[in-house]
Image (tube, rainbow, N blue to C red; front, side):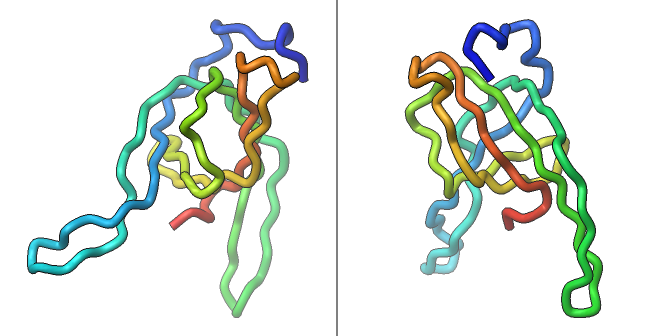
Length: 112
């Protein structure tokens, strides 16, 4: 994918990006919880679907390529919420190293 192949008009899918942070639990302790970092529109492209039988349970996951405008504050440990579904970020690629677009390779239904 090249920078010139992407356009702002393709950014149609609203996404919420979250980071795991320690939060007060209200009883003097702390707990890890997902906190919203930012909202952005994206070009989301499903790649593959697969279903696996793990521990006598079916698990389904879908691979996606997600394109957003460049940001410096995103980490692979963050997650994305797309239409109430969590997505794990596998890789963050700065397309052509031009600081214009990011390609996020993600798995649906993995980040908890």
